[in-house]
Amino acid sequence: MDVKTLSAIIGHVSSATTLNIYTHVTDEMQRNAARNIDQGIAGAEVKEEPEREESAPPVTFTPYQPAHRRPGTGCISQINDHLWEGRYSPKWIDGKKHARNIYAHTREECEAKLAALIVQMKRELAELKAAQAAGAPFRH
Image (tube, rainbow, N blue to C red):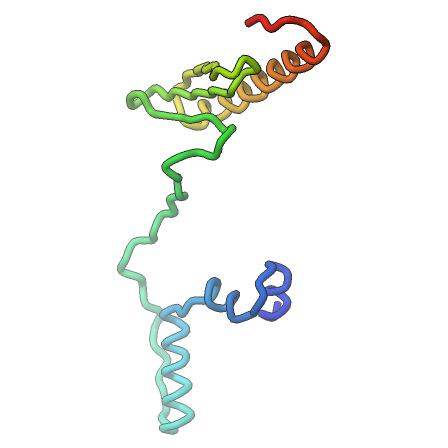
């Protein structure tokens, strides 16, 4: 698709912003440009080069992990090489933080358990707020 349409879809004010962020020059693009310049300006006959194998190993992608998670998402820490801890500490209706922990053998398992714990605690908190609004005393 053309850059202007892509820029509008992404929400950039200018297509220059899109080009600055999402375009890059590859080795193949540089070779093609050099070949075109040689043929166009110098009128030289250019021999086709055999495909080169890349000597550098491919870079593996590692997602950015911020130092702190967003509020309301709990926290996860690795206790040792085979144990992860997840903690969620919302502020209860009495104004105090009530922490609960979960443990898992992998980060992915810990993320899943923590998500379930957050849903459960938010449900409990909503029930307590509803009971308090109805006039029932707070008990924990």
